Length: 248
Image (cartoon, rainbow, N blue to C red; front, side, top):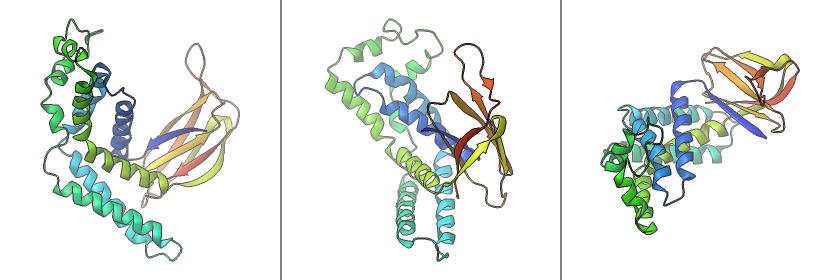
């Protein structure tokens, strides 16, 4: 199945963007410094946001309050709910005790600062333009591995906080099977308890993808057909897919 996601508020959008960059980091070979520079520069840009730590704390507090309300319902399984609440409390404790800005190790890496100035130039990360990168490319693999390991370690709290929030949003999704006549589907939302995340699942052999828009009041999905040549084309047939809306 192909899976698509769309955030319905800015904190969820921030977390999905962060996740996409961390996914790039995980795909990097553990000694490939050149490939690592772009995603780590993007992560440093995220870390430069002064409100990032506060956003994580506020989102975890919001999720914890929602779980507390759920615990009053006799229909909710108490064990999984307590497990989520424990994880949230532990993550909040670490975030509140963490005083050092995220990405502090990256800020002091000269090679990242030099590469940032070359990212807008085609081929700007060539060894001839970045002698420091040429130096690192000729070091023993163990030394490059240790350097990249220190970069990862300095972002573990940020990544684990992001992972926890997104895991809970995804786990709270209520799923339904729906159909989109002429490739279009829309629905109103309860503005008092709007979902944070829309998830779609569709058979991956279909050459189509969704264009999703929405806010706290309603959302709309427009399925488009991918073409080998030219822009995507609107689908005129009925598309069946699964729709998941987070309950948090």
